[in-house]
Length: 187
Image (cartoon, rainbow, N blue to C red; front, side, top):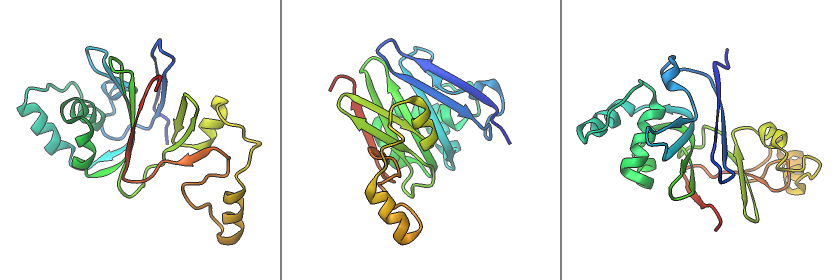
């Protein structure tokens, strides 16, 4: 079923976040993504499910955070503001997430410890592109779909699958499970 919703966020610095949503947790428009804080400083796209979101929500409410939705995305958004990068180790669930900090001009990518939710990225010079599907990266024009990865082809011919971090397209990699990375714009 789905998709239920699509959204986009553009920052004048050149960053764009796009999201296609399959609504599971909060079916209302309050769960729309990219989700943005009221002060417009944080923007987040998220794929997955956070199993301990109710516990995290209670902890954040106890420190003064107010929630508008029942979405686990909003728990992640406030959790990132409160705990920063320590949030990722607090999470129980499956996720791939990107959070943009407008003031610091920093993008953080994170993926669950078992790598259940897909996250692909391409890093070239001063440019970073990421997506949950290879087809989205190819549609964006950021990678050359004609440039095949010879290691990936060899892996596929030997084992019937492509071993991470490789993908079939040269220059595009699988983001490692259980990791997070920050990208400071201009650095």
